[in-house]
Image (tube, rainbow, N blue to C red):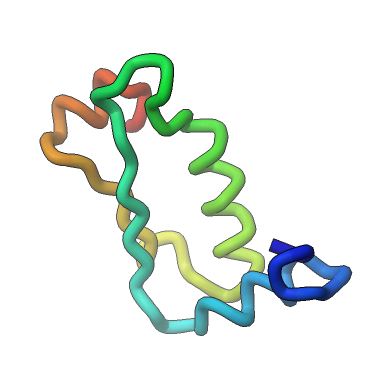
Length: 75
């Protein structure tokens, strides 16, 4: 993100794409096995979003089915 937005602070980079009060949807892919979205990556993104001013209840993680999320390691 820092390289993409030419800044040194990752929180500053995230603040260029999100604003406090917005609801952020993170679409994950839990069907492709090896190429699936890893929960650790999503955890890191959520931490940066929170640092940028997005509240936890304003972040939605979704996939096709709730069972797909559970099978992919999301709670």
